[in-house]
Image (cartoon, rainbow, N blue to C red; front, side, top):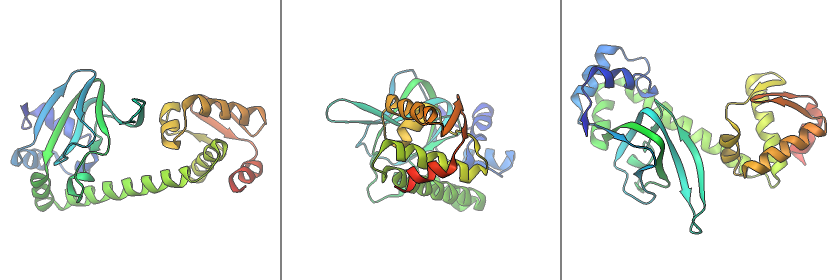
Length: 231
């Protein structure tokens, strides 16, 4: 374990949205006042297992961690990947059911700061901006969960993909959209296998409804896509 009160750690912490709008000197004072610990994980390491008690908020300072569900059959599914500045545990740490719902795993190693629940409360009391950032982060995660549940409500894979594309069209205000997720992340978000995603995207292209190159997608026939979406 490493202490948090080092200039390098302060610089890494600034990437986290929890400290958005907080000046450097205040960040240093806030972090210096809490007893959070920094730990470096090698590749293929488990940070937390599904079902373990969650009593800390985690911040990825360096590297990447995957949030995975491991089924009884042994099959694994990556729910999301967290990069530098992303957080985990902030929902469960204040929940009545404070257990990790998924396994936190490092694919290629990571540096993580973990702050105990009581220390998170201290940060909230010490900084109104930190409190607002935490509430915004929790609200955004609830919104994202609702979006994901909405996507999963569609029965067919094609409908899920079309609903996702139309949602991006609405957000970006253009028929030419830039996908915010790579293919694996998109498949995980939609709850479908990646090969099925690629196959249905290719079918939509063959049908003349979309064109795409990597993350750039052009919606050619919005009317036809809307018809698939609503059927």
